[in-house]
Amino acid sequence: PFWISFADLMTALMTLFLVVMAVTLISITQSIPKTVEQEAIRRQDIKIVMGLLNAQSKPFEKVRVDESNYRIDLGEIVRFDSASSVISSEAGIFLRSDMPVLLKVKKYEQGRWIKRYVIEGFTDQDGSYTYNLRLSLDRSLNVICALIPKVGAEDSKSLTQSQLREIQELFLVGGFSFNSIMEDKAASRRVELKVEFWGVGEKEKADKKAMLLNKEFGAC
Image 1 (spheres, rainbow, N blue to C red):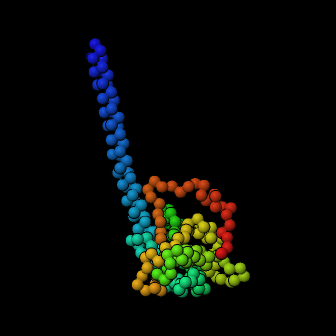
Image 2 (cartoon, one colour):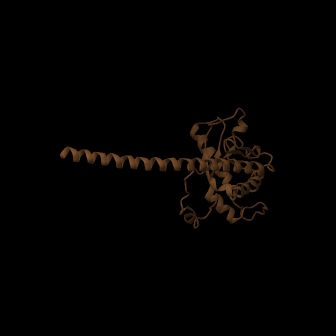
Image 3 (cartoon, one colour):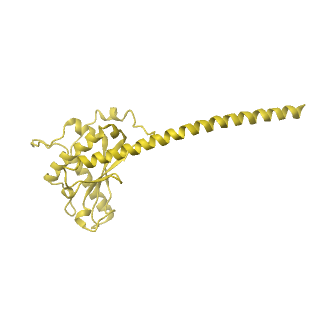
Protein backbone atom coordinates (compact mmCIF):
# COMPACT_ATOMS: atom_id res chain seq x y z
CA PRO A 1 0.00 0.00 0.00
CA PHE A 2 2.88 2.38 0.77
CA TRP A 3 4.45 2.04 -2.67
CA ILE A 4 1.09 2.35 -4.38
CA SER A 5 0.41 5.60 -2.50
CA PHE A 6 3.90 6.86 -3.24
CA ALA A 7 3.45 6.12 -6.95
CA ASP A 8 0.12 7.93 -6.97
CA LEU A 9 1.78 10.94 -5.32
CA MET A 10 4.57 11.04 -7.90
CA THR A 11 2.03 10.72 -10.71
CA ALA A 12 0.05 13.65 -9.29
CA LEU A 13 3.21 15.76 -8.98
CA MET A 14 4.25 14.91 -12.54
CA THR A 15 0.77 15.86 -13.80
CA LEU A 16 0.93 19.17 -11.90
CA PHE A 17 4.41 19.84 -13.33
CA LEU A 18 3.18 19.18 -16.87
CA VAL A 19 0.23 21.53 -16.38
CA VAL A 20 2.52 24.31 -15.09
CA MET A 21 4.91 23.80 -18.01
CA ALA A 22 2.04 23.87 -20.52
CA VAL A 23 0.68 27.13 -19.08
CA THR A 24 4.18 28.67 -19.07
CA LEU A 25 4.84 27.68 -22.67
CA ILE A 26 1.50 29.12 -23.81
CA SER A 27 2.24 32.39 -21.97
CA ILE A 28 5.72 32.64 -23.52
CA THR A 29 4.40 31.77 -26.98
CA GLN A 30 1.82 34.55 -26.73
CA SER A 31 4.25 37.17 -25.37
CA ILE A 32 6.96 36.63 -28.00
CA PRO A 33 4.88 37.82 -30.97
CA LYS A 34 3.77 40.88 -28.99
CA THR A 35 7.38 41.78 -28.15
CA VAL A 36 8.46 41.24 -31.75
CA GLU A 37 5.62 43.48 -32.93
CA GLN A 38 6.57 46.22 -30.46
CA GLU A 39 10.21 46.08 -31.55
CA ALA A 40 9.16 46.31 -35.20
CA ILE A 41 7.06 49.40 -34.40
CA ARG A 42 9.99 50.89 -32.49
CA ARG A 43 12.41 50.36 -35.39
CA GLN A 44 9.98 51.88 -37.86
CA ASP A 45 9.34 54.90 -35.60
CA ILE A 46 13.09 55.44 -35.15
CA LYS A 47 13.54 55.35 -38.92
CA ILE A 48 10.85 58.04 -39.22
CA VAL A 49 12.50 60.13 -36.49
CA MET A 50 15.89 60.06 -38.23
CA GLY A 51 14.18 60.93 -41.51
CA LEU A 52 12.49 63.91 -39.84
CA LEU A 53 15.80 65.07 -38.37
CA ASN A 54 17.40 64.82 -41.80
CA ALA A 55 14.56 66.60 -43.59
CA GLN A 56 14.29 69.43 -41.07
CA SER A 57 18.06 69.92 -41.04
CA LYS A 58 18.14 70.54 -44.80
CA PRO A 59 17.95 74.35 -44.42
CA PHE A 60 21.21 74.11 -42.45
CA GLU A 61 23.46 73.13 -45.35
CA LYS A 62 26.45 72.19 -43.21
CA VAL A 63 24.56 69.68 -41.05
CA ARG A 64 24.90 66.02 -42.02
CA VAL A 65 22.54 63.42 -40.54
CA ASP A 66 23.66 59.78 -40.51
CA GLU A 67 20.30 58.02 -40.34
CA SER A 68 21.82 54.54 -39.99
CA ASN A 69 24.11 55.31 -37.04
CA TYR A 70 21.86 57.89 -35.35
CA ARG A 71 24.46 60.65 -35.53
CA ILE A 72 24.36 64.32 -36.50
CA ASP A 73 27.49 66.14 -37.62
CA LEU A 74 27.04 69.85 -37.01
CA GLY A 75 29.36 70.62 -39.90
CA GLU A 76 32.20 73.00 -40.59
CA ILE A 77 30.56 75.95 -38.89
CA VAL A 78 31.11 74.29 -35.50
CA ARG A 79 34.83 73.63 -35.88
CA PHE A 80 37.50 74.72 -33.43
CA ASP A 81 40.94 76.24 -33.67
CA SER A 82 43.79 74.10 -32.42
CA ALA A 83 43.87 73.86 -28.60
CA SER A 84 40.70 75.99 -28.38
CA SER A 85 37.15 75.30 -27.25
CA VAL A 86 35.79 78.75 -28.15
CA ILE A 87 32.66 78.80 -30.30
CA SER A 88 32.44 81.67 -32.73
CA SER A 89 29.52 84.09 -32.62
CA GLU A 90 28.43 82.81 -36.04
CA ALA A 91 28.43 79.24 -34.76
CA GLY A 92 26.48 80.35 -31.69
CA ILE A 93 23.72 81.87 -33.84
CA PHE A 94 23.65 78.70 -35.93
CA LEU A 95 23.29 76.51 -32.82
CA ARG A 96 20.44 78.61 -31.44
CA SER A 97 18.69 78.17 -34.79
CA ASP A 98 19.36 74.44 -35.20
CA MET A 99 18.74 73.06 -31.71
CA PRO A 100 14.99 73.89 -31.71
CA VAL A 101 14.71 71.46 -34.65
CA LEU A 102 15.78 68.62 -32.34
CA LEU A 103 13.23 69.71 -29.75
CA LYS A 104 10.50 69.91 -32.41
CA VAL A 105 11.12 66.35 -33.64
CA LYS A 106 10.88 65.10 -30.06
CA LYS A 107 7.26 66.33 -29.99
CA TYR A 108 6.18 64.10 -32.87
CA GLU A 109 4.35 60.89 -32.02
CA GLN A 110 7.39 58.85 -33.06
CA GLY A 111 9.61 61.16 -31.03
CA ARG A 112 8.49 59.44 -27.84
CA TRP A 113 11.31 56.95 -28.42
CA ILE A 114 13.99 59.67 -28.15
CA LYS A 115 15.77 59.15 -24.86
CA ARG A 116 18.40 61.85 -25.12
CA TYR A 117 20.77 63.78 -27.36
CA VAL A 118 24.45 63.38 -26.45
CA ILE A 119 26.78 66.16 -27.59
CA GLU A 120 30.18 64.59 -28.30
CA GLY A 121 33.34 66.67 -28.64
CA PHE A 122 36.46 65.53 -30.51
CA THR A 123 40.03 66.77 -30.96
CA ASP A 124 42.97 66.18 -33.27
CA GLN A 125 45.94 64.07 -32.14
CA ASP A 126 48.14 66.94 -30.91
CA GLY A 127 48.79 66.76 -27.16
CA SER A 128 48.26 64.07 -24.54
CA TYR A 129 45.18 61.90 -24.14
CA THR A 130 44.07 63.52 -20.88
CA TYR A 131 44.66 67.04 -22.20
CA ASN A 132 42.50 66.30 -25.23
CA LEU A 133 39.90 64.55 -23.09
CA ARG A 134 39.41 67.78 -21.17
CA LEU A 135 39.50 69.84 -24.37
CA SER A 136 36.91 67.67 -26.13
CA LEU A 137 34.63 67.84 -23.09
CA ASP A 138 34.97 71.64 -22.99
CA ARG A 139 34.01 71.79 -26.66
CA SER A 140 30.82 69.83 -26.15
CA LEU A 141 30.01 71.82 -23.00
CA ASN A 142 30.43 75.10 -24.88
CA VAL A 143 27.77 74.00 -27.35
CA ILE A 144 25.34 74.11 -24.43
CA CYS A 145 26.82 77.39 -23.24
CA ALA A 146 26.22 78.91 -26.68
CA LEU A 147 22.49 78.32 -26.21
CA ILE A 148 22.23 80.52 -23.14
CA PRO A 149 21.04 84.07 -23.86
CA LYS A 150 23.80 86.61 -23.31
CA VAL A 151 22.93 89.33 -20.82
CA GLY A 152 22.22 92.60 -22.62
CA ALA A 153 22.68 91.07 -26.08
CA GLU A 154 19.95 91.36 -28.69
CA ASP A 155 19.56 88.11 -30.56
CA SER A 156 16.49 87.14 -32.55
CA LYS A 157 17.58 83.50 -32.27
CA SER A 158 17.55 83.40 -28.47
CA LEU A 159 15.93 80.31 -26.99
CA THR A 160 12.95 80.62 -24.69
CA GLN A 161 12.99 79.45 -21.09
CA SER A 162 10.75 76.57 -22.10
CA GLN A 163 13.25 75.45 -24.75
CA LEU A 164 16.14 75.72 -22.30
CA ARG A 165 14.17 73.53 -19.90
CA GLU A 166 13.73 70.92 -22.61
CA ILE A 167 17.46 71.05 -23.37
CA GLN A 168 18.20 70.54 -19.68
CA GLU A 169 16.04 67.40 -19.72
CA LEU A 170 17.26 65.95 -23.03
CA PHE A 171 20.89 66.90 -23.57
CA LEU A 172 24.09 65.42 -22.14
CA VAL A 173 27.73 66.10 -23.04
CA GLY A 174 30.75 63.86 -23.49
CA GLY A 175 34.39 64.13 -24.57
CA PHE A 176 36.22 61.64 -26.80
CA SER A 177 39.74 63.09 -26.81
CA PHE A 178 41.46 62.18 -30.10
CA ASN A 179 39.54 58.93 -30.53
CA SER A 180 37.81 58.80 -33.92
CA ILE A 181 40.22 61.27 -35.51
CA MET A 182 40.00 62.06 -39.22
CA GLU A 183 42.73 62.48 -41.80
CA ASP A 184 42.19 66.22 -41.77
CA LYS A 185 43.09 67.76 -38.39
CA ALA A 186 40.60 70.59 -38.83
CA ALA A 187 37.80 68.07 -39.45
CA SER A 188 38.82 66.21 -36.28
CA ARG A 189 38.22 69.30 -34.15
CA ARG A 190 34.47 68.91 -34.37
CA VAL A 191 31.26 68.27 -32.45
CA GLU A 192 28.68 65.60 -33.23
CA LEU A 193 25.34 64.69 -31.72
CA LYS A 194 24.34 61.12 -30.99
CA VAL A 195 20.63 60.33 -30.78
CA GLU A 196 19.82 57.68 -28.15
CA PHE A 197 16.47 55.88 -28.06
CA TRP A 198 14.43 54.09 -25.42
CA GLY A 199 14.21 50.33 -25.72
CA VAL A 200 10.96 48.38 -25.70
CA GLY A 201 9.75 48.20 -22.11
CA GLU A 202 12.03 50.99 -20.85
CA LYS A 203 10.38 53.79 -18.96
CA GLU A 204 11.62 57.24 -18.05
CA LYS A 205 11.69 57.77 -14.32
CA ALA A 206 8.49 59.53 -13.34
CA ASP A 207 10.20 61.80 -10.83
CA LYS A 208 12.85 63.02 -13.27
CA LYS A 209 10.99 66.05 -14.61
CA ALA A 210 9.64 66.95 -11.19
CA MET A 211 13.19 66.90 -9.86
CA LEU A 212 14.34 69.30 -12.58
CA LEU A 213 11.53 71.81 -12.15
CA ASN A 214 13.35 73.74 -9.45
CA LYS A 215 16.80 73.57 -11.02
CA GLU A 216 18.17 76.71 -12.65
CA PHE A 217 19.75 76.34 -16.07
CA GLY A 218 22.83 78.13 -14.79
CA ALA A 219 25.54 80.09 -16.56
CA CYS A 220 28.91 79.28 -18.12
